[in-house]
Structures are given as structure tokens and as C-alpha cells.
Length: 394
Image (cartoon, rainbow, N blue to C red; front, side, top):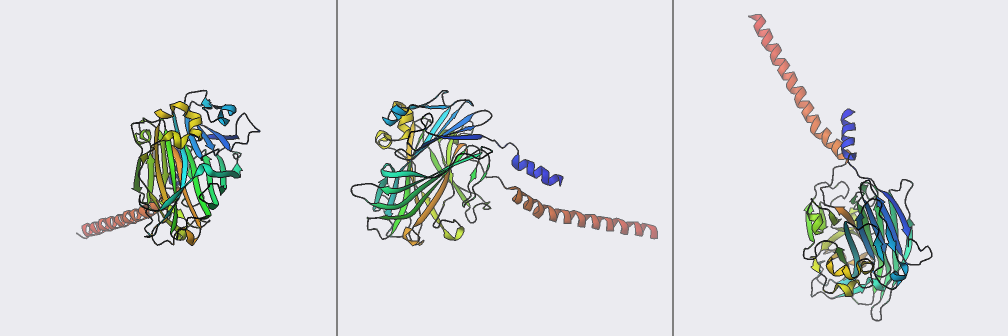
């Protein structure tokens, strides 16, 4: 019993906890902008999450002193001007912008999108986003979530029917998501699930697959670069059959002496609403590249409303993640794809074994050791008895 209590202590000790509060358009209850602001207050600092769907979907993170808060000038916000600030200068900022949904024609059925692959890009600014579900905290203030859905894409030439859904969650403590791939989260994590449900376009492609292009903006040195790394993870308890993890790390996140933001995901997507191993397919990640014209790409986003003219001094890069792989039947097989990733403040760490796994390992390793000790003790005792018997007969 003492051993089990000690193991439980090891799995729960040093777990940071934050109290979460979410508010829509702070200071302007009648504003119709789809912007949600969450403060995640910890004992030594506060993380600020701003989720903005007025324009291109943007997830913003800022780290400040514990009592800091954000201020919004809604008149300037409507005019697409710098309009968001903090009463304490952030130590670090990061933003992820979902820039384009890409449809490509994978005629060779490789799952790989190359520069020569026929494709079209759907600018996310042309989607009309509406709230599907909102959870403004639990009684313990350890969880908030927001589901946004787009049902209409407006473009003079391209047509895309169906739903693109973005599900966002922020957490106040450590744990795992309840849906596959059950990504690990901490009190410094935002989770994003992107769902493409029943998409139908007028491209005429017979081998359609979809990809997501996103732009990252951070207060790291603009002369540095984020990196993408895939690493093995032998524990598939929470993601059965998936033994690797992909990390996209900003420069400060790569250096454990300083903390930045890193993205993390399992290289797997799901082709049914209820995700499982049998309805999974692969995810491919492409290289990180610089954004050629950040002002054009980001002029109508929250990123510009926060950084303003200082946008030129930020590290701005982009990457693409495509869903699906060879011989999985393409998107049309089920007309459904979902992919999940997390946005984390800190540095990537190896996922801890759960208490159950630790107990199984302890039993699996400990039981043979006990048998060896018992067997060894028995043999030693028997030899001593035999030796004594020989001595007495003499």
C-alpha cells in the first residue's frame, strides 16, 4: 500500500494548476465579434489566450505577471488597427493563424503534396464562422472550450460546401483528452481539433485530399527559425498503434533555459466522427518556411490588431499539414477528416507513464525479482541445512 501511495505521489507531484476565466469581447457585451478572452492565472504568472474568428481564425498566447489583464479598444479593433494591449508587458507572445484550407488532387495516391500537385487554396477569411458550443469554465475553473463552425465559403470562382469545424480547449491542470489520439495537456496547453465534414467543391478532382496551412508568429528573434522534429514514443497507452510524436518548437522553446511555445501532435488523423485506430490515417508535415509578405497575409487578423507596426520585428513562418495517405480511399471514402494538435508554453518533454502503467511495470518486474529472492533464500537455506547435517554425522 505504501508503495502504491508513493507511486501516486510521483504522478501528481509538481503539477501546476491554473484558474481559468473566459469572457466574450471584454468591455463590450453587445459587440458581435467572435472573440473570446481567457485568463489562466497561476501562482507565479498568467497565460492569456485570445481566440479570434473575426477574419482568419487566430489563437493567441501571452505570458505576463500574475495580475496582468488585456485591454481592448473596440473602435480601433473594428477599424483593423492596433487595438489590444496588456497593463503589464508580456514576457513572451505567440499566435497561430489558420491561413488556408488546401484541397489537392492526389492522382498518384501517395498522400504527398508537392509543388507540382494540382491544388486550390481556400482563404479562411472567406469562411463565415458561427459559435456551435461554448463552455465557460467548470466549477473548479480548470477547463474552457469553444466550438466554431463554418458552413459557407464565399468566393467568386471557387465553391466549397460542407463544414469546417474548429474546436478549442484550454486546461487548468495536467491530463489527457478523452478522444483519440488523447493528447497530453498541462496547465499551459491549448488544444485545437480541426474537422472537415462533408466538404464538396467544384474543382472536379477525383482524388481529393485536404491540408491545413497555418502561420505562426512569435516574439522570438526574427533571424531565428522554428523547427519540426518527429520522435519515437514507446508508450502508446493513450494513442494505440501510434508510436511517434511531432513537435514544432519555436527558438525559445528549443532552449530549456528559456521558455517559448511549441506545437505538438500525433501523426494521425481520423476519418469518422468517433475516432479509433480502425478509422485512422496518416498525417504528413511539411517544412517550416518564411512568409514572403506577412502584411498581406495577416493584415485582417488579430495578429495585426495586437502587434501593429511592430509585426515586422516578430518571427513569422508557415507550415502545412496534410491529412491522409496512400490507399486509404481519399477524402471521398467517408467525407470526414479530423486532426488534433496542442499549443503549449514551455519545452517538449517525454510523456510520463500513467499510474496504471507504472503499477503494471512494477508488478511485471517486481514479481520475478521476488520469486528469485524466495528461490535463492530457499536454496541457500537448504545448503546450510545439508552442511549442518554433514557436520553432525562426523
